[in-house]
Amino acid sequence: MKAASMTARRQNLVSCHNCHLLCDAPVPVGKQQVACCPRCGTTLHSRKPNSLMRTWALVFAAVILYLPANLLPITITRAIGITQSDTIISGVIYFLHSGMVPIALVIFIASVFVPLMKLLILIYLLISVQRRSRRRLVDRTRLYRLTELVGRWSMVDVYVVTILVALVKLGAVARVDAGPATPYFAGVVIITMFAAESFDPRLIWDVMEDDE
Image (tube, rainbow, N blue to C red; front, side):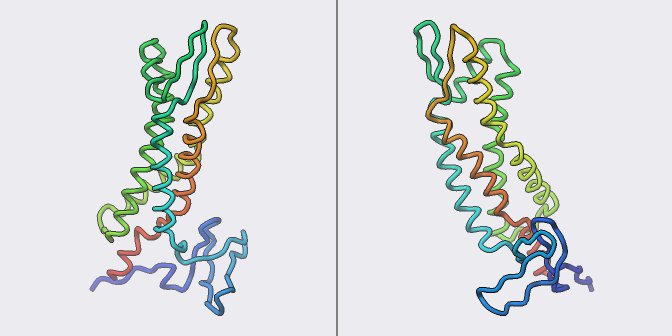
């Protein structure tokens, strides 16, 4: 007979999701009373409340913003009396044709590949948890950690555009301004960071605990 694994929840303990201190599980005395971590003061929860619902809402919002972020011009270039608007993809193509491959790769990875991968990974994690999948639990946990890690560097996307605009403005011949896609783009970055934060990775392992 397989012995049930010892988990914090079975020991009536709860881990603070902010500082990871292991605390006694809060005893529900009243709806208005909450228990807080004695070290950092964060409200303690065995699982983040409404984690799946909030993460789905944030992911949907990010997907909606992702479309104008990529379809509208991200930069408007003015040079020798000629004005040209470029989306992210057309900007990448322009730099490729101009022989500036490293810049094209940086923009493509930071502005297209990373945000899209974050959204796809979060959608995959949400669906797998809702379907109570028992497959590749460790790999799914690693995927979540990767999304969390990338989220910390997500603002690089916005910095790329900002630095590009600042650098080209130094020239007297040409000038680059941020286009209407910029706020949508920043919205995607910020909302995906909140979506990764709202997802509770402990939900991935709950199916194993229930089986035992």
